[in-house]
Image (cartoon, rainbow, N blue to C red):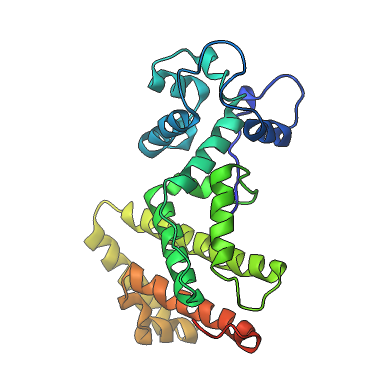
Length: 260
């Protein structure tokens, strides 16, 4: 459970409050004011409007003014619900945890962690901008906390202490983020070629030249012997995930957690 917040500094509050306090205030302040008229929008509606913009136009397009327009209201009225753009992105980050199906614990920890990794990958591939949002800082909202509870529940009963449980889940999540980032980067590089066949011919010619030079024996072995290039994206993900889970299993096998 991680978050890198994309901050528009021109959209920051001017009261000198730190970004962390602003984010905390979002979750410690009731969305329904004690006085005055009832809110016209829920936090979920605001977050969903921002998510729709990010999906169609990219994360940079998500501003207070743009979200307000999407909701059919004025930009100033949105500040009744969120203090600034950082709070808005925090709201979006938390909402995305609620919009994804996460695996129920079955007592088969290895199978459960596999499903968790696939669910995490699915949401990142469906919303690539999330790579800029779920990153280095924790999301502090209720949906993120429910995800936190669910994910640690998957590895309960393995004889691990709370730190080891956390490390295990973070290892799977961090690895999945890195794998998806590489998947998307490769797709962007090779998908950008206007003529895929011409790009393949150019790459083949380059690879043959490198292999024929004799200077790169391991690269030559990889391009001539490797099965990885013949696997689709799902199979590549599962193959690497199996290796990761096998490594985790080796660390818990002597703690009564061998049921996978």
